[in-house]
Image 1 (spheres, helix red, strand yellow):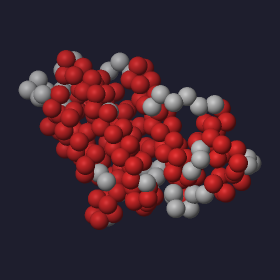
Image 2: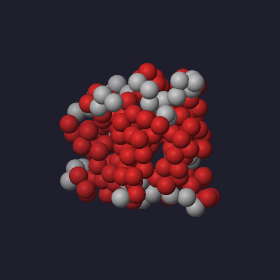
Image 3: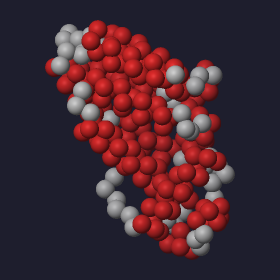
Image 4: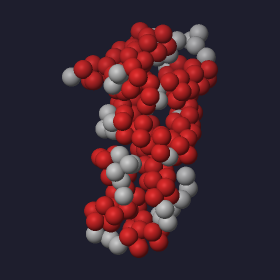
Length: 207
């Protein structure tokens, strides 16, 4: 995701993503986008010739912003156990803002965009490996755990299991399901010292 956009292009993509988040991709139109931006459709089509391109580039820009924020978070928090907590808080905060129905709609109508979302999630495996490796060195993760295997399993389980249809078919809220999944993972992964920090994630979510 190395594309660089002009200020006008970013404005279009940010408003597109916000509109899709609010209303879903089915209700999202270039007509409504043009009205919201006070910009002609001709200008929008000059940069993004089809609705599919607009959806794809909007999601890609969102990924890039997420990646930038995650890297900034990891730089500003030296404690790896708290890094784990804050990254998961950040992820769950974003998940809770989008309805499962709208995600299911995106997956159904734009499967290529959804595949890019899955690729982006799997790429976070290296971030979690780095966090867990340092946490193990500092005594927050058990010594008998292979963190490379855990990081790979962790991201693949999330990617393959936590799909829109999984939540819809089981009548589960994403943030609640992920929280319980994390409790299972951290309970077997972290030491007592590490669990003191990871419990902050669950305590804060219950407030």
